[in-house]
Amino acid sequence: MKRAILFDMDGTLVDNMAFHTTSWVQFFASRGRQIDPQAFFRRTTGRHAAEILRDWLDGGLSDAECEALTEVKEGLYRRLYAPHLKPLAGLEAFIAQARAQGVRLAVGTAAPPSNVRFTLDGLGLRDHFDAVVGAADVQRGKPDPEVFLKAAQACGAEPRDCIVIEDAPLGLEAARRAGMRAVALTTTMPAEDFKAFDHLIAVAADYRGLSPESLFARAWTTSPDAGTIAGAGPPGRHGE
Image (cartoon, rainbow, N blue to C red; front, side):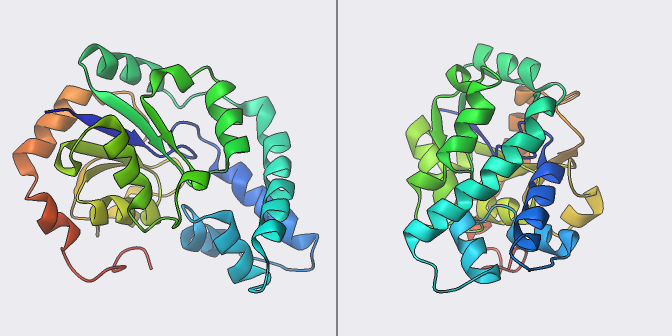
């Protein structure tokens, strides 16, 4: 049996979602489109940029056009966040504990390769992960479970032996559909916003006070069959 912890990246490894929101607001404003930041965040966090661009800008955009526009937006984000880049409090100690206990670690993110490099390589974290699955590696964004299922497979772990750490409803819904227990971090949303998710084993502000062993003990004590989690209610009841 192999255990794995699957991390979202933005808002989970780093506390950066406010900068993403600001960059989206500026990106759309430069194209004559005004958006409500909170409503936009709730509807889009975890989705692929191409999905967002087609939904909010032009449904007829080609893949090449989406890729070019994504890099414009993400370049703006990286310029805004670069002076503030740092790991979320307690992350490095949490990772060290997990590695010492033989837990596999992976990243499952909707971010494009340029942002993955910016964050993981910028913080020197990449070598701590057994797998990194990003937007370029999947066909469907969250709440589809593809990114977490691929990350689990890359770690050689069954979904029931995985814990997902997320900060947004679409990501938590993806974990639920994958048949995985989850931890919600309140970096960008209050704890009250996660009450409807019945597969959560913890809600925390950051990694201080969390330990891999205690999370797995809680998951194995309370976790129903993975198939039961994945089928608990109609698809999209939390995230769509």
